[in-house]
Length: 315
Image 1 (cartoon, rainbow, N blue to C red):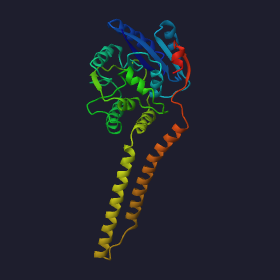
Image 2: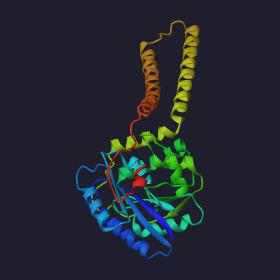
Image 3: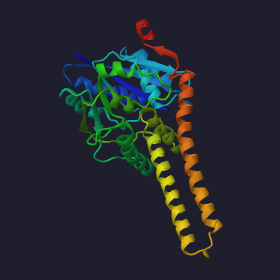
């Protein structure tokens, strides 16, 4: 009997989390040779009693573990917290809003049985807002460049990993994790399986534009490419300035009456000053994260748990 640990970060999901858990249980009753456990992490939900509902589930079902974080740390931090409490042979990541639908779980399990370390469920047709679709496309391009994601792999919030990969992932203790970036560093044995994408059952996405930008900046923890890009831009701008200076000097020698205008000088100053500030901003982003890491900014803090053993608490 293989145990599948299902990790779900929960945020304002009082109205949906019970339905998700009980639908998953019904799916596992249809599958021979597999059992499931849940690790539900309340990521500081401010608008409802999400952890109260998780506690009720934990009291009703012994295979439901509840983790209540001290405050909101973010989806990927909550996932890292959940991974520390898993015991399964495979670990499945899902959302709390029914978009990663329980009916599709068997597809990921069957793909994992082919010998992959990591499998993503990919969607032929997404049922998201225009903004979410645009940011998802940006994510695909950025993750390929910055994180080294294989070109033929599509990532999503619906994934499954082996216990061995989980054991490596939880060693990462930085305050600002990006779960996919850690996956790509750990293994290249990655697969995709097509799954159906369902609409959100209740409410709208909790990701604002500000949160999406913050999540994208987390990519920088796993790549020095922004620094290399800034170096290339600096070299290109310096070369362009040098060539422009030569051209102006030649024109002046050929025709001494040519006036060298102050406007072109101001434009050059503005362009090069902007480049300098951009490069300094990139360097500052890296330095700021280094300071936060040196100050041991916590990845997450657990307030209380339910159905968690003493041995798991000591992890």
